[in-house]
Amino acid sequence: MIFRPFRTFLAICALAQFQVCIAILSNRTVDDFNGDLITGFLPLYEPQNAWNTDGNCTSCSVKPDPTQALDHTWHDSSQRAGDSPSSVTLQFTGTAIYLFCIVPADDATNLVNLTFTLDGTFTGAYTHTPIGSKDISYLVPVLATGGFNNTPHTLVARTASPSLFIFDYAMYT
Ligand SMILES: *[C@@H]1O[C@H](CO)[C@@H](O)[C@H](O)[C@H]1NC(C)=O
Ligand SMILES: *[C@@H]1O[C@H](CO)[C@@H](O)[C@H](O)[C@H]1NC(C)=O
Ligand SMILES: *[C@@H]1O[C@H](CO)[C@@H](O)[C@H](O)[C@H]1NC(C)=O
Image (tube, rainbow, N blue to C red; front, side, top):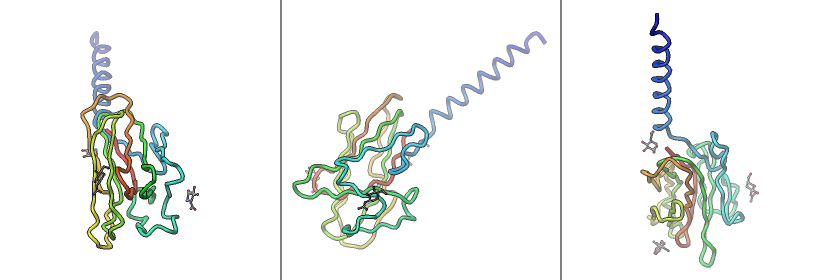
């Protein structure tokens, strides 16, 4: 009887530890359109007028299938020669981040050439040279990077040269 409060304390402690473990190991999604449902953060697209959403771009030659995109949404931008780079900025608190894009294999104009910075430091690049087919790949992991402190971070994904950029979603740990 005398030990009951102590046992209760231990039980609460174990439960707290368990929840901490789950929190450390979980992934959160940041959709291109709905953003981060937990923090409410919405991705920032720049320059704003260089981005289209959900295929309402009538002049775009690449027409993805909405049912194959997360939440049936994406944002797309084409940086042409002489344009400034198109970028997506994400803010999150976590130890790893993953970005998923829609990548066309289409004709020679659809190079995808992206570069990534975390807190202002280069953290990766992704290049896909078109192979002249009509295929479109979905949920393509263009960046997977981690091992950083569980503190607030800013990830910027931008076109590295004239390039197509179709952002579907991100995930962070
Ligand atoms: C988070 O998602 C990435 C990408 O799908 C995966 O590689 C990783 O194992 C996931 N991490 C956890 C903790 O589920
Ligand atoms: C595309 O849809 C977005 C969001 O619904 C809207 O803000 C934008 O003006 C639309 N663009 C065009 C070209 O219709
Ligand atoms: C991608 O961008 C980098 C940086 O601007 C450039 O050096 C490289 O040539 C580009 N890749 C292609 C295939 O054009």
